[in-house]
Amino acid sequence: MEFIDLKTQQQLIKKKLDANIQRVLNHGQYIMGPEVKELESKLAAYVGVKHAIGCASGTDALLMALMALNIGVGDAVITTPFTFIATAEVISLIGAIPLFADIDPRTCNLEPSSLEKVITNRNLKPKAIIAVDLYGLPSDYDRIGEIAEKYGIFVIEDAAQSFGGEVRGKKTCSFGHIACTSFFPAKPLGCYGDGGMCFTDNDELAAALDSIRVHGKGGHKYDILPVLDIKRAIFQ
Image (tube, rainbow, N blue to C red; front, top):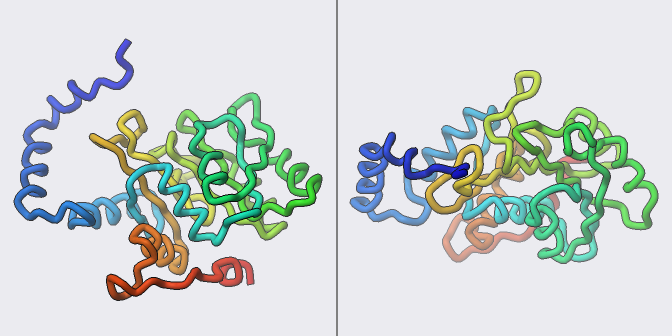
């Protein structure tokens, strides 16, 4: 059974697809061209947040989120063991320590009641939680957010499998301090290739993400910005 039938999809939109590809070839702005800004604007409006920052993949989106929150070597990050490897992989890639909480057997999403056990039963105080939305269903961000606020912990929403989902009138990719999604062809909003995006309502985080995706660039191409003390800005 072919679960992802891109050939049939392409037949339905072939004329528009060919025209848009030709438009890119004509203007030649292949990196961060006008189509990227257009997509960011439309998806931010759809999700209901102020900022959307595109990147190369969903994995890069998660990595950028951790970097924007100043999480690095020796820091602890809580996540779920029931997810694609990329969620935990990015934690290890930046030298942080992944801690695993339990999942809800009904939804397979992160179980909020297990978070405090992980937070309080270890010597390491976690700096962030990466909750993963599965099968189009958002995690319980109300409860996760309450626990995170209590302990001063960042929340990242991994919405690679839930773009377009909604709970109580709020779209996925609008939860947590930063939300991340993937445009891998098999995802709810797939592309022909790979891509990802970060979403946030925080202006400083948006600026940090925008800089990180171009190697820390500031106002000038070769001005590299220092890392922001984003925790101070958010929690104080």
